[in-house]
Length: 453
Image (cartoon, rainbow, N blue to C red):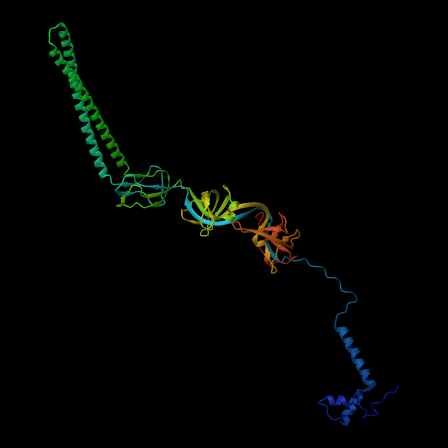
């Protein structure tokens, strides 16, 4: 191999240069003799040696500046996993799952009593109660004008006195007739003895017999007069009793204890017999009247439990039962079902005419439930929960959801888990929406035990 000297041939071309390289450089300038000599000095083996030396120098400099390690880097010890969220936990529970038939209806009185005046055509003088008042049996609800009836009573009493005086007079007349009869009887007996002795004529005896018969008839008439007078007294006494009764009926009394549901009586109005002045809910007992379709009627039986709620008052919750089912259907093929209401604490707010919701329990089965907040819906329509492990990490588990149990007071809403989770398993409730499978958590409260960390 031969090398061409750069010093001897200043005009020699640059290594690897050709016309194309010169054309491709737009800023290339014509080479002057001095420029050619400078470039020739960097060409050839000498330039290669210089470049190699520069590379080795740079590598040595880098080795001095960068730290060196004669041993492989030691393995880094793994750090402890930190908790990603603070959560609350509840255990899955087994509870009865109720299948209900939902309907609604109106609160009615179990036994509504109509109170009407028995005296007719009398003006109302006073009304002693208002709608909603509780009354006891025998309480005076209203007072009617008694002036006319009092006058009738006084008149009947006067007529009784007259009848009693007539009785006394007829009795005296009867006594006189009885005395005359006795005298006529003695006279006839004496004349009969004289006639037998021949001392008197037959005509005289006949006269005495006629007087005796007349006295007997007079006694009979006097006795009849006494009976008539006594009957008059009895009739007048009946009139007095009736007038007194009507006078007593000017006080409208409560027939039974209960609540005044309706009041139509007003002071100054004229009461009519048979026209109600008051409506009383007997014994304060109310019931709920609901409609059940014919297709579902076979699922409802007497005594079936019923859960009563109100859309207007969330705190009103009652437990009732089916009391009766009407034997006939209405025009829309529905039967009227009456639900008895156990008043209790919430029932004190019940009023006739209220609109309430009734969930008739038609079936009950055991099931596993969780607080609804613990169940996380996924975009694909599935549901998962995060189960708490002993090492405070969570595992995501897919579950199948069944019925929903509505919230009740301080108890949150729950969901039935039909598959994917057993009972008594700790599951994340609050904070579940921010977790991923395998996350470590900090349990701040266990809703199953009420313990706080």
